[in-house]
Image (cartoon, rainbow, N blue to C red):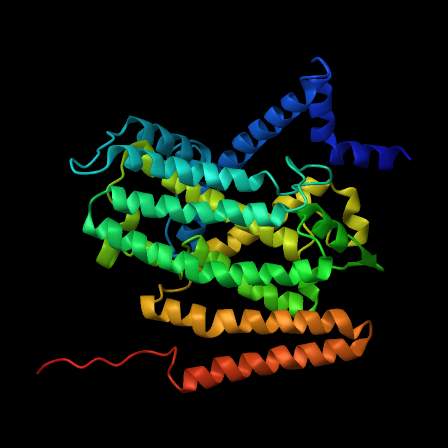
Length: 396
C-alpha cells in the first residue's frame, strides 16, 4: 500500500502542487489562478525542452557527421543555448526600409502564440491537461492552421522576392500535407467516437495481459500513423521536407529578412511545433501518457508522455542527419498522388475494421487491403516514373 501511495503521489505531484498553491487564495480566484499556473508551466517547460533539444541535435548531428558538437560553453557545451539566447537578444534588429513594419513584427509572435495554444489541450499526464474540451483535437488543428498565416505574413511583409517565394512555397507545402494530417487523425476519431484527446488516451489505456491497446498496433492505426508522421514532418519543415529554407535557391526563405530576437522566435516556433505535433502523435497512436506495458504503470504518467515526445524528436534529428532534401515537384507529387489517396483508403479500412467485429478475419482483410494498396500505389507509380527523377535536356 505504501509503494502504491508513493507511486500515485509522484504521478500527481504537479497536480497536488498546483492545488496546494491555489488553496491560499479566495475561492473565487482559484479557477483563474489554476489556469495561470498551467500556462506558466507550459511556457517554462517547453522552451526549456527546446534549449536542451538544440544541444542534443547539434551533438547528435556531430556524431553522425564524424565531428564535434558544442563543447566550449559550459560543461560539455550544455550552456550553448544560453550563449545563443544572449547573442539573439543583443544582435541588431534590422527591418528592411520598404517592409511593412507592423506585420513584420507580428509574424513571429503569431507563430509562437499559435503553437503555444496547441499545448493547452494536450494531456501530458493523468489529470494534467490545461483545458479538457470535448473538441480538443479540432482546437489543436485550428491553432496549427494559424501558423500558415504567420509564415505568409513574414514573407509578404519583408518586401523581398526570396521571402515571398519562400512563403508561398511553405504555405503550399503546409496546406498540401495538412489535409492527410487531418484525415489520418480522423481514423482515430472514428474508432474512439470522440474529439477529446483525454478520451482518446483513455480508450488506449487498456491492456490485454501486459500489452496495451495502442492504435498503432492495428493495421489501420499503423497505416494512419505512417501517413501522420510523413505529414507532420512536412508540416514542421523538417528534413527531407525543409524546402521553405532552401539555402541554394531561397537563402532562408520566408524569414530571410529577420534578424536578432525575431529570428530566434521563428527558430523557437519551429521546435515548439515539433514538440506539439510529436505530443499529438503520441496521444493519437501511442496511448499518450499510458505505459507501454501494464506493470510499468508505477512510473509517473508524465514521464511516459515526455519520453515518447523525445523519442519522436530523436527520429526527427536522425532523419535530418540521414536523408537528402526533396525537390519541390517530388514533394507535391508525393502529397497528392500517394499520401492523400492512401490516407483516404485507410479511412475506408478503418470503417471496415470498426464494423467487422472482433476476430482474426478483420486483421487479415484490413492488412491485405493496405499492403496491396501500398505495393500498387508505390511500386507501380515508381515504375511509371510519376515520382522518380526527371530527365533534363541541355543545349549543345
